[in-house]
Length: 206
Image (cartoon, rainbow, N blue to C red; front, side, top):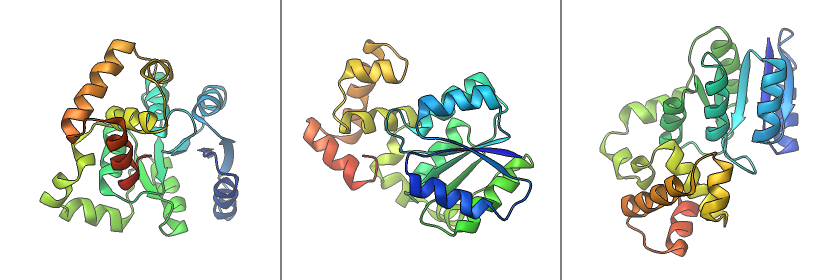
């Protein structure tokens, strides 16, 4: 089983290789950003993709969207430092078959790859419980109001990207991105870029 790992941190990539070294039937492939990840996926057609949400250009959500547009049956696991159940829920909305937190048990990644590789889905038990029992608390999180595409635009705005740059990165029109940006501000109740950046940092989006 060939597994594409898309992560821009060499230490994380090395750690993934080490964790997977005990699985004789798993052959890892690597990429460091969305662009190279898309190229490797197209060329190699891996069985499973493990994609970091916070990639240096467009996010893992956007990469997952592009891969699934090419291959709707692609098996994707989203990988993140953030264990907020909202991120897991958005990953599922995008079409991912699994979600793993980098701060969790390393065996979660192995189990996720094996299960998703078999055609199943995977959430670490701790995150699954948080989603199941979040109830009204999850709805109170500002992030719960945003779609995965809106989260992507918040992240890029927080990184200082202009609306024109964001439109190019997410392969959309300037008008669409501008309208989405306005909707985001209304949903989050913020008026300035500074307020948006502070909120994004506080909730692990930036």
